[in-house]
Image 1 (spheres, rainbow, N blue to C red):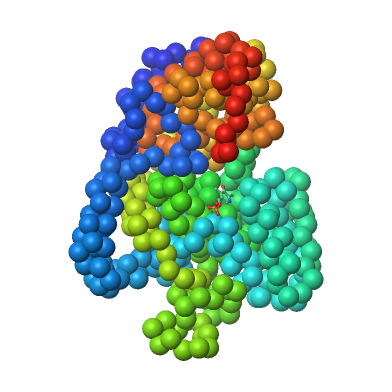
Image 2: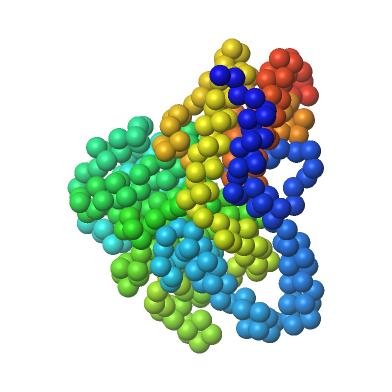
Length: 413
Ligand SMILES: *Cc1c(COP(=O)(O)O)cnc(C)c1O
């Protein structure tokens, strides 16, 4: 049966999360399907940052490190993120970016499994992860091999006892494929392998259960589904059982036992603060709290359900409206096996995405031919998905690949 706009409006009327959209400043007339890449602006962020600049910085000056709690932000924000990723407090700090945190955790894991010399990763993972792995293998002080896996759906079959650490994204940034963290981690542990989970595309889109899965390490962004703002620092999780043994190479003063003792020798502090390096961008850090505030009172299971419903509706609508033009789903179809975005392969994907953006439907493009659309359940409606797919069809019919306006490639796609 054909899916109608009326049906989508009915889904919206029954959506228990519909009121959450009012927590965001969203430009009228736009349909934002890129919240998996840069989350929307929460209401309150602008005012908060203005206050931080004027009062905390402008008026209170350096005292704010104490009086406004700037120094404790990495730990305080980390504890707030814990609630979204199923971690007990004291195991997450917010700092640096995902790439750097990955580097630190790789070294920590290679240090713990010091008698093993192999890193496993997904060839299809976000390339920065692969680059950092390459760099960590080169800089860890012993010969370490990197093995890239082509088919992560059966990743556990690739595990062997030579492997020190596996780096895996819970949700793949392109295909949307979701791995079962619990199953994969426990298979790894049976062979003594540590796992670093990259949560960039799962945190804020679904419940994550780090402690239950007995995860070792995890990293993730705060500027995607967590709505922390462009370039907002990332987070890093280390299970408490590793705190006393882990060492990381970027051992700056923020991870020193006594940062204000100014001793010339390094002595690591205890606990998760060992993952810190140096001073953090306070303004960006402050904005993360507003991003996290958009999840207040939100049941993550309900969020996941809405996300799955949105993915399914979008896939069905694309099939209904656009499959005759050769637009095809890339990645798993079942909602349980995917995250909160959908990639579609189409020969002229780049120009179609540009033509859609020109009409206010914002998605993105991932080489070689993928149109990628993310569904942030907090602020999207089902009717918007209907409208977006209709605009996709009309954009394709307009053949934007013949129009130079839609073929210009910017520095960021
Ligand atoms: C977005 C993303 C990153 C981004 O890393 P940065 O260091 O913040 O630039 C890394 N890994 C994955 C899987 C991502 O999706």
